[in-house]
Image 1 (cartoon, rainbow, N blue to C red):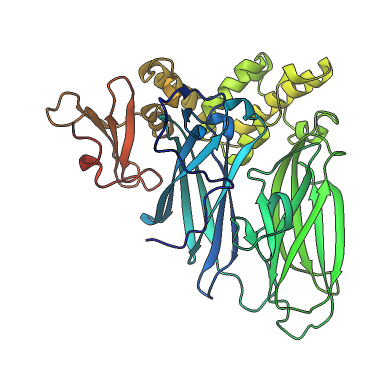
Image 2: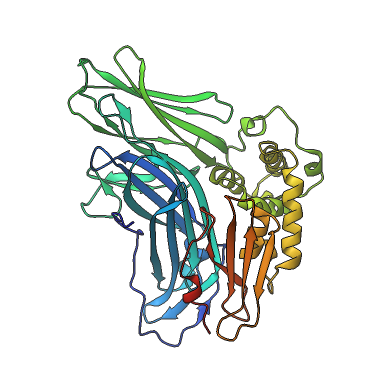
Length: 468
């Protein structure tokens, strides 16, 4: 099912096809793919407009020298499922070229946007990013997205989109909408010198008999729901729909997780529609918000009290396959104790990490931590490839997420095909398989196909890239 596609990245460069003798420059950071999904009124009454904003660090790419300088790229796959059916799939290359690697910054994320239309349903989005020059380096995300068309009569708000900047736009640009260039802040992480920009749309403002003024209210709450900011503005009913844009500074806010709530109110201040989005602030000058540590009345789990920062970071890295995006952002942006200015700040970060790891597992099924870490240990012992930990491999990930397969069919020495394995799970979704292929004898078995509805699906796996 092929639907409308609008764009892929802020800066798109042509990869040189007439390169000099290429020199490979290894990445400096781990490849991390982050994405946010926003829903707006569709092009007709039966659809919803979907925007997938995504980002990855420019220092996470493997670069090669060419006539233009040094070039890297991410190969992105988007799969959208409705129940057991794949309803939308696309794949595109996101290239990035710079004069030389000295200009690459730890603080810079490359941001792109992909847009299309969907009808009503409860969808699963799977996005996979692979380093073009080193496909074994990859990251993926999985998110459930309910899609419902907006009410045709009652006033209603779209999703709230967080942005790093909003300015008067140039028509035809990748981030252009409603006369504005809205540059997404994917993941919603802000530092002390930034402002939180946000964008939303309101519809059906002239419906019904009420012709009086209405109000747009924005509230910001901390991790325990305490209001720390409120702003309200009156609006006249002059048009059927409006764009809502605003901003606020964060330099006086402490490090922590916050929620922005946007409300549409009638003349009596009764709520007509609300919409919200979480964001995270990293502000070392102000320190950590005490509510981040007090967001649960329970103390850190005993096993974390003796762990140092490296042990905590390692376990959270292991837990990446069961962590949601908000948890990854919250933990990752706490920073490192070595970067703090005082011992008190270092202790606060360490305490926060211990607390977050404790809450992470408490919010999941009892006993899951022990089972999960046992699977990680097995993956690290059995699927390690050269310097790559077993839990980072495709077979390791599948073992961690789904457990030991009921059956493994191995084909290590076929005459006409590369070595491959078929793992079967009889009690998942009525029975599913995972197919792994060893494309390179010096590499690892790569997942090329699965019948699991949330995994990579390629019915032609046995005819594409497996023959010798």
